[in-house]
Image 1: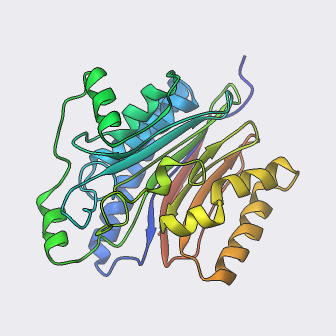
Image 2 (image 1 turned 90 degrees about the vertical axis):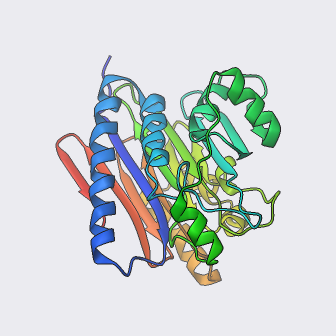
Length: 283
């Protein structure tokens, strides 16, 4: 039985912004395209499949710091992290520092049905191969040039939150990491602090991973909503505290009533939402 109008919100990362207005416009067009295709998926399936699909499309586009085109660590390797959460089942799965697989979100999605639901490094790669996923070097010539010049991409983690027609919420988040980090560093994107969904709301975070972990960002917002705050007020209070501490991050959120919001302490947060015939992409 239908109980809700489907809602989807996606984000392509927080960061310093874009000096090239042409590139900024191109990224907005890509967000709009991915949003349109993913919303169609949401209408045809459910929240869990929609966020998986949306993040996979974001991973496949080298403009974003996830999957293909991810930033490289200090040794020049791409080690990817991603997670997914089914709010209706309060079930979380993720991969951390996965190499040679271009879509870590597909591995995280498959782990949702497993007993061991968070895998890292070689264990995550072994599981991906068991799934039949082909190994692939996600590094692009542009990412390698940035690494050689010690230049980052200017934006961060991608993610999606969805509410389906059955009233279920889900979230998914994926990242190529901070860039130039020490090998072995653990990303927040494989943790519930950056990616969380329950029966009340779904949150996907982006920004400096260590600071997101210190803030317990996604869970803190969800706890406030569960305690009775509106999604907007939970975001406002949480980001006010973050701003006062000088931390850099952003997030998108969606609640069980179909309300959605986004906030950032960085210069820009690239995101878009769609609800029925209405849609929006940030400037």
